[in-house]
Image (cartoon, rainbow, N blue to C red; front, top):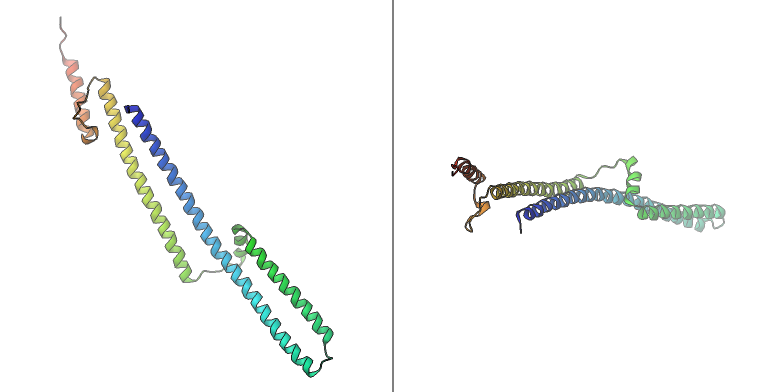
Length: 206
């Protein structure tokens, strides 16, 4: 593989690493948003289920009281009882319809419904979310550190390749035992400058 080819491969690898990091950041951001949305949606569903349970409990109590009154006076309030039952049934259907609608809504719709309520998460749930967020941020910092190290390594490789190109242009050929990445950049540059100086000072034969 030529020097220029190696340089291009290293540059492409660096660009791919940046793309992966950006994709991970978007994934973490999207995941955090989805987690918050799911929490809010669960709160809404729980609230609607409690409302529905309360309505069903009230209906059961009303039915029990109505049955007791009918035992005491079978002819009293039959028409009113029918109206109350019809209203209760309609209310139950309405609540069930709202609950089904909420469950079928996308996450963003759940957020819009939840915002006016301004519900505060319990401390335990809040700590759980903060812990997840901290882990995600730690993972992101780890990737950023890795990217920084890769950038430094890519910079060293780039400098080494430029040095090798410079040596090639000045006619300095490395032996088979010369390893580029094992030599300090300063020593390599000094060798190139020293060899160039010798070529310039070499007397011209007459």
